[in-house]
Amino acid sequence: MNEQVLIQTAQAMVAEGRGILAADESTGTIEKRFRSIGVENTEPNRRAYRDMLFTTPGFEQYTSGVILFEETLFQSALDGTPFPKLLADKGVIPGIKVDKGTKPLAGSPNELITEGLDGLRERLVKYKEAGARFAKWRAVITIGDGIPTDYCIHTNAHALARYAALCQEADIVPIVEPEVLMDADNTIEVCEAVTGRTLEAVFDELRRQRILLEGMVLKPNMVVSGKKCPVQADRRTVAEATLRTLKRYVPAAVPGIAFLSGGQSDEDATAHLDLMNKMGPLPWRLTFSYGRALQAAALKAWGGHNVEAGRKAHLHRARMNGLAAAGKWDPALEKAA
Ligand code: 13P
Image (cartoon, rainbow, N blue to C red):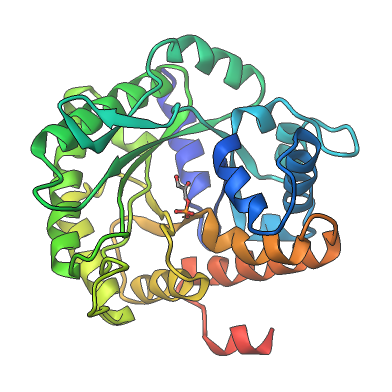
């Protein structure tokens, strides 16, 4: 393990005013996205879509890294350049989703466990050769009647730490992503309590499994009201609850926190990040690692063929979130665009 390499990469991933584009949708997930715009889920279409995103002129100013799906890591852009090289040449760090998705948790089938540890050490060698310098593993915590159980939180935390240790051994920075879902009818208070329990268990395991905290990035959910909750917390409440929780459970040794968007509207995801950065100084850098909140508008504008419109929409959201990552966003900038 080369500590210097890990620390430098982790710091570059959360450099001021830049964040991470999560473009690592599995073939099943991109199918859902493509269906929403009536595009067939074929290998050439997936390649063309990602090409549009990664060739957006100027997006690198706001984008420190891109998380790729395995297929994309080994694909080439339409001009023949391998995608990881195309990104690296722009100063954007290529990363790779390494988990194999979720399955029902044995003994508690309404909860999920993330798979993908078997063979991971060998896969990481291949990914590194292909140019990946960081990785991502997503654990999913579901809120519901009697859940999450401690069993679910702890088995997922254990798997996250095992993944992170293997990454660091290979000089690959692990993005540690414990996502508390926002789909249920719970209040923001319940989300805060569950997010706290989850982060506590995750950092316990990371420490027990000897993770270099300076050489990782945390990717958590924000503390929000469940989507089906009749009372929706306002933006300031979300920002305050999220910061309070992070300050309680995330050690200052972690260089940066890159949030997932989790189903928030594009503008909420930007506004929340901006508000939190305006509430600094903070012990870690706060930025984005958005999938949907960076891509939804671009996907729609592209629609399978309109490359210029797709790039324009992508650049706009990248810029808005880059500003939010520095606490410099203003809602008027959305209207101006
Ligand atoms: P969303 O921002 O769409 O939640 O996706 C981020 C991600 O990488 C989920 O694993």
